Each structure stands twice: as structure tokens, then as C-alpha cells.
Length: 311
Image 1 (spheres, rainbow, N blue to C red):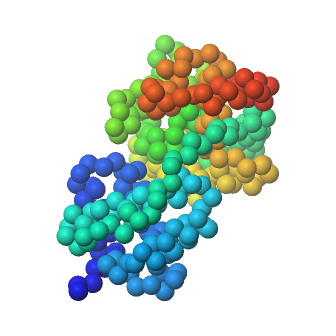
Image 2 (image 1 turned 60 degrees about the horizontal axis):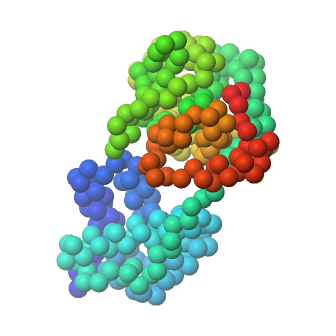
């Protein structure tokens, strides 16, 4: 029997997804999830030959995932990715039966919101502002970027995937207020209003960024940038880059803070501001049938803990 190289057919599968018009994030997730399976084989000294997989090996893989990840949704996604990959191989006539069909898929778990506490939101903003005040030049520009990132998440509730694609042109002034134009890949564009205090912060950042790009001789259109302590490296800030920044925040402040939980704090803030539920769902990028019940229940249960304001 011809041996099927995992990496070769994984690459062909990803190419097929690209041709079918799947989004950048969808393709990235498939690639990540399939690489986890490759790592499992490598760590256990198994050859990267896809048609030598056995039911025993598939069961071992699910145990591997259960030990490696705490989140049921993370495990579910990785099992599903491998199942769909084998469905693709069946379509290519390499398999008759999908070995992953023997594995029960865990039901999707609805994660309860875990918003960053308002005191920690205030602490984070004060920390970033203090860094801006005490620094100059490129180091100051890095902290100014971080303050813009803070406003994009807590001020506008943007997801990391939306932030990756933002350009300066996506932020526009209308009726004396700044708004962000969000253009998801599979939805119509919409705008989110930013708090009034964003105006001077943004205008100072644009001036500093323009000077920094000229100094480091780089050209890009993105709003944020990737940089080391000495210079701007390139335009844009990836999800991984944002994760690193929030890990640094957590280490410096001494409390865990993530982009996801800061965004959830923004959603609570909108609820406290009595913004229409339909508008909040639009800004969150969710379907109309999505329920904000868990947020509203927490708000009613602990109003002192979950009432948020602008900072």
C-alpha cells in the first residue's frame, strides 16, 4: 500500500480550504489543530504516515488532548479538525472509513463570562499611562500603541481577529466623535463609537507613529505595529503579539489579564450604559439569536462587582 505523508496531504488539504474561500482565521485554526496531531505523533515516535493510523492511536490522541487542554471546547475543535481532514482524505479515495467517526464529539460548552474586574481595568490603564509619562522616543511610542490597544478592546469591544486587520483609515471622526469601521470577512461592515477621551490619545499616537515610521524608514497602513525595544519592525499586530503584550501586563501588574476578559468587561460596560441589546450584539459580531443572558444574570446578581464605566 502507498504510504501517505501527513505533511504533504495536510498541505494539500489547507490548499483546498483556501481555494474554497475559507477565511484566514479558519485556515489558521485548521493548520494549528492539525499540527497538534503531528506533534502528538512525533512526541510518541510515530511515523508521519497518515494511512497507518489505528483506532488505538486515535484513542491515544484523545487522551493526549484531555491531558494537554483544560477547555472542552479546545479539545472538541481539535478532534473535529482531524475528523474533517479524514473526510477530505475519503473524498480523495485514500480512505474508506473515517477513523475519527469512532470518537464521540463532546458537546460545545458555553463559557460563562469572566470579565476583568473594573478595579483591574483602571489599574491597567493607569499603568500604561504612567509608562507614557515616564518615557520618550520609541519606548514611549510602544506604550502609546498599548494604550490604543486598550481602547480598541475596552473602548470598542473589538476581537483580536478584528484588531489584526485594522488600518488607520478604519478610524474616522463623525459628529465630533471617533468611530471604528469594522469589516469582518463574512459580514457587512459596521461602526463602533469610541469614548470621547479616545480623541486626544489617538491624535497624539498618529503623530508619534508617523514620526516613528519616518525614523525607522518603514511604510505600512496598519493602525498598530510590531516592534522591539529599539525600532518598529513592521505594521500590524498579530493575535500572538497581542497575547504577548497581555502576558507582560499580567507580569508587571501582578494580576492575570487577557484580551478576552477585557473585552467581556467592555460588554458589561455597554449593558451598564443601557445600550440596546441588538446594538451590543452587532458590535460583538454575534448572531441576533445569541443570548446575553449570562451577562445580564451576573449583572443582576452582583451589580457592585460587574458595573463598569469609562475609565
